[in-house]
Length: 342
Image (cartoon, rainbow, N blue to C red):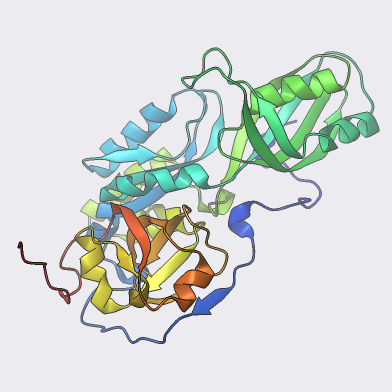
């Protein structure tokens, strides 16, 4: 029994990133094709500067080690990774490249999916196991393990779904969708206790991070081969390895802004409501959102200062405050005036 090729029933739920969205239009606005470009039209050098590799992490090395290997294989200056995996855990590890590192924090809010083999220390029937698993869907309280780098205090995490796929004797294969920061090792221990016995995590694979799925994963060897082929004149393989940085923030609610507002945001200015063209419904004050151009480019990550309804209706006021600017300055022409010192 292995989580690598887990099959079984359809999932009973979905991650927040997969929820249906409704787009609201504040004002229709054109975009000038002379400035910027849709992410799919970027050159390979542009992807290397603002891209993300969804790596299939192998068992053995740490997340930091494999991210460093991606840096060396692609010959980039900076990398970051979204969500640490223990050395023996495999699966989806998004690695951001160069200036795309500024977007890595967005992945901390993306839900994760894991496929796990739990080993029970005593025999329990399939119906008992499924009933116990169901009890852990919703809010759960966990204390990080001793060897964790975070503070050892109880914290609440949400489990979106937990489906038992297969059971062979004392080995239970299950799929779980959960909030980032959920410890699956602890979950196995707690499920064992709920069954009146002990349980431990035997094997674990992360099968999804936000909207990144198994089909998006590439290997370290793919990255190295892609770079070698690129040096020989063939970009195809390396392009398959690197996705636009927008892929790493696609799970966030977003607002799309008019061309005239883009460069002001790139210089760190707050986003005025009048600069918004369209937006996702359901944005709340204080929420982390993505500010996008009308061509679908990530301009900045920001904190919402208004709800979606307020953004839609406001005649003035600040709608969002940029936290991380991603787009280079002067990608779009300046259409704002710097306030003179009095």
